[in-house]
Length: 123
Image 1 (cartoon, rainbow, N blue to C red):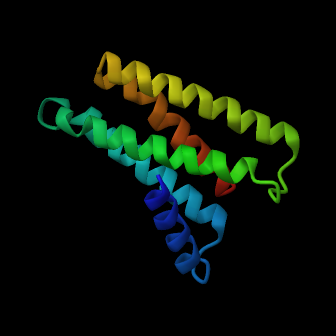
Image 2: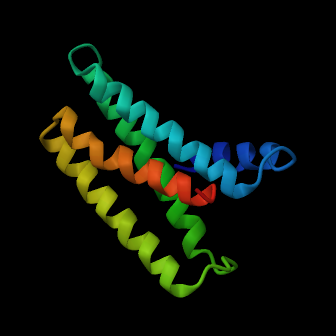
Image 3: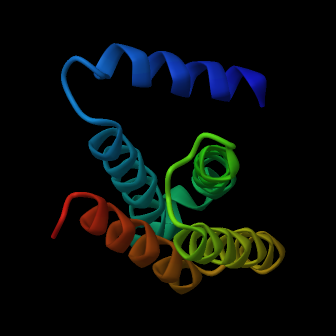
């Protein structure tokens, strides 16, 4: 997990001169959504990529939760609680998908990631 955090931190540091942290988070959420969507769209050929796509998404959400619960995070408590509740849903849904894989089950994760990314981008 530390390697993932280090990679995220390095990417964030490198990208700071180019994009805002919100834009970086949005881009990573879209990347995770795209990976999941690719698996869902070509299930017969890519079902073996499901675990990797789910792991990427789960790690990304774990990092987002870590950022939200950081003491220096300026978000209002209500927004923090909403994000934590959403993350809890995502983690639970991910475990359900892993237990009973179906391409249509990925749709909710894809939609959540895309919606949050759009919100971060102000759309």
